[in-house]
Each structure stands twice: as C-alpha cells, then as structure tokens.
Length: 320
Image (cartoon, rainbow, N blue to C red; front, side, top):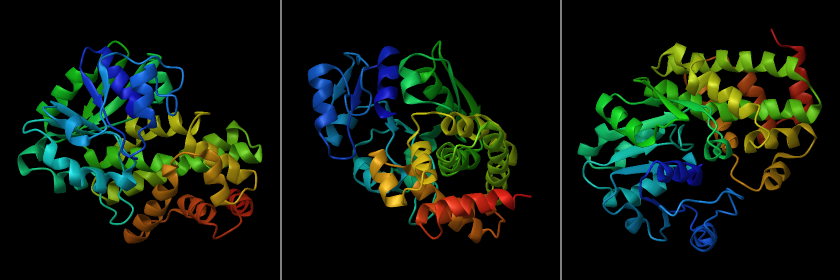
C-alpha cells in the first residue's frame, strides 16, 4: 500500500520520497534500478517522481506531507524516531489505522504522543476499501478521511484526490480507526469460509454479524455507531474480505483447510495484521463488557486455543 500510494501521489504531480520501515533495502534498490517494487507491487512501472531513501531523516526533510503506511504494531517504534524530522506545518497522514497491540491505543493517539504539539492538529486518518493493486490500476476508489481539523482534511484531499480517488470527510476518527483495524480480524473468518468450501450465503451472514460487533465497539469507545456502515466500516470490510489477494483472507483460508496458525502465517509470507487485530479486539470487548461471540471464535482459531475448523462449525451451529 505504501508503494501504491506513492505512485498515486507521484502521478498527481508530487515529488515523493519512499522509505521502508523493515530495514529491508531490497524493495528500495529495486525501485532505483528497475522502477518497480518487485517484492510488494510486482509488474507496476513506477513514476520517476518516486525517489527511494534509505535514511528516514532524508525521506522526511522539508516534506509538506508525511504518509505513514507501516503495520500498526510497529507504528510507535517508527514514529518515535521519525517525529524529530517532520517539518513544522507538515500534514501527518495515518494510513496504517487501528489499535496498538500492547497498549490498545488508537494509532492517531500514538502519533500525537510523539510529534510536536503544534503538529497534532494536522494528523489525518484515511481508511476505506482500497486494494493497492487496484489503486495503481486507477480503478475508482472511495475512502473516508477523518480529522477534527477541517483545514487539514481539505489539504490532504487536494494532494490525494483525483479522477479515480474520492475522499469523504468525517470527524469520527474513532469510528474510522476501529472499522479500518478490525475489518482485518473478521476477514480471517471470511477466508475460513473459503477454506471450508462454504459459499456466499455464509459470508453474507457473517459480514452482517461482524458489522454488528464493530458498531457496538465503536459506540463503546466514543465513536459514532453509524460510521460502521460507511466506507471505513462496511466498505472496507467487504473490500478486504472478498479480495482474493488479501493476506488476512488467505491466512483464514489456510486455517479453514486445517493448517495450524503458525504454519498458515508462514505460508502467507507477509504481515497478517488481522492476527494482532483480533487479539486487540478480544481485549477491548472484555474491557467494555461487550458480547462478541464472533470475535471470540476468531480469537480462539487464531491463537490455537481451539481447533479452528471445529470452533468455526460450532459457532455457525449456535449462531442466533
């Protein structure tokens, strides 16, 4: 997604510097040499406006906008040493979304903790149904953009929006973050449907059930329940769970075929954010005393507490 957004921004006429959080320089070298990120976005010819940077300070120098597209689990580490190099007045755009696994804090709160106080008003969240490969193919994509600061929303929209990307503003940062994070958890269950050979009838029922649990959590955490039924909620949930390329969906498919969670993760070969997301979801549901049997079942499957196939089938039999 980081490379896909870089491509969109570059084609919008902006100079883009890209840095890789993993410390893995291979994708950056590939971009320099081939104008292609063969590891994460194979087959896409990247704009000459994209420049690889191996040092984060160089990547951030004099930048008007910083897009953070790292896995949520490493956001605190990344922003803690990146914050010193973010320019005064820069926009800080959270594309990672979600909840930090150790503390259960929302990602914008973690960002705001580390950046200078005057920059906190410039933190903006973007979330919605956006598959990286389809973004670079210029398929029409609509997402929510969230902040309490209308001016920051307007500035980010001017940078990112174009003929095939539309951003719809909201002030409900909590709802957008929760929807964007926990769609990954429920997508694992939709993947399990594929592994078990279940059809669209089952998936449609489970997606409806997932939205009920997401909306309850949004409300409990101080967001607006209706955000679950907007682009960052139902839109992102449908887009991710029905996408054949989704890492979370593929992980669930492997579970549904009987593979242990550790083996399923290795087969995906990339970060499966739904694993941390479902653990956070389980803890938050307990914290707010919410009844979330669907999330509880996914948690048991992901952690290996129960046999995944047996737990899934039992859940369907007892669905009320």
